[in-house]
Image 1 (cartoon, helix red, strand yellow):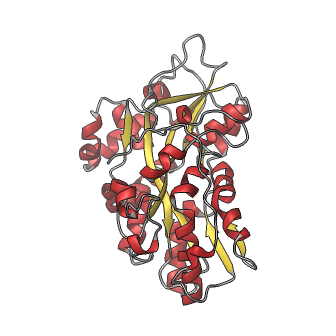
Image 2 (cartoon, helix red, strand yellow):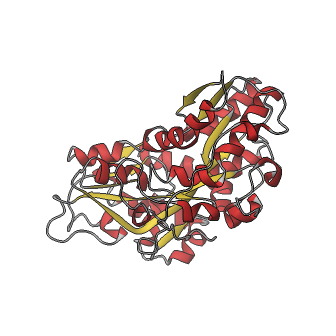
Length: 371
């Protein structure tokens, strides 16, 4: 998967938003319910394409629901009840695979439903290898990585992921997401498993046990989080020495809030985030969702999002348009997870493996937590 696109710092071009994106969509709903993750990421979405879209569509109202972490379970329940209340849902790639496989997300005609690049390159060619199925429209490449308190790690700041498990050198609490993804991969890697063998090892009961055993060496020192905002706050309050979260959250804490926090890029977990359209929407709501989707994922809008948060745009044509932070005036390229200086040792998810094994590993993780 070609997730190492360098984000060039050039002057962003301006492309007018407007009703040209309404072509072929017929009568459209005058309301839009969007589902995302909250925080700095959702704010970047609002500024980069929700507000411009609404400004060019008179009478349209929109609401945000911050339930993306529970998207699969909630869409299953809505579908079962025959009452889908969401119009567009921002999900990670592994969840998009499950939703598509279960028929809970619409299969799209990607080159018809999405805008071509400015030079005429089709959407599928522009997104390239980041297209994982016909239901998922990628927006950004982000990473889950480690932040640490620069004043609490002694004279030698951590440079490798396995510092997470080194309580002797770096004593203190850790913050980890309350889910197995990332944690089991890091645990096996730091228990001596080669990066390319991680999913083979995780495919055995013994391998899963080994991952949990490694996590068990720090379990008593872990604060488990569910929302991405928690780790930056725990770090800012000095309640943890280091912890995992999304690189955009750490960027906000470090650059925008000037917190005494450093970022560890080693074995950052690259992931994709993007939109799915829930299956079974009424015609007018589906038309509105597709109209917004075409606008929000065009070349300029994805480049614009990078002006507000340090996530790499998923379109190749967007990369040269990424410039400076809209408010801070700093070059954004060095803060991107895809920047070569930050991407020398990255972890790439096996999306198919997680789609096939997520429910089982989740259940085993919850049982392990309860011990």
